Image 1 (cartoon, rainbow, N blue to C red):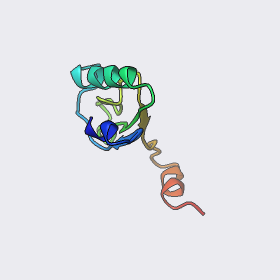
Image 2: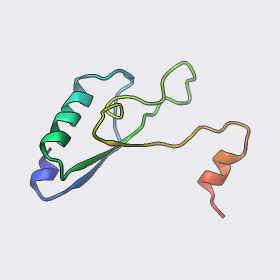
Image 3: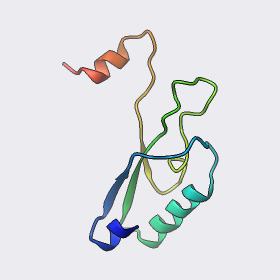
Length: 87
């Protein structure tokens, strides 16, 4: 990750795969975070929550050494509106 070598210690990645398994991408992220313990990868949890049959947590968010950020799906409860439009 070039950003680490340019001085960044936190990096946000809003991309991922449709794969919910611990794959080589997640393993690479874990190896990098372990090697550079002053670096924190922040990744999107996944973009497939609209399809109920799929996992909403996908690679690389399944890595052990990252922070995965997502939004809960709250159908019919009004919570989604409150999260998008806080008072």
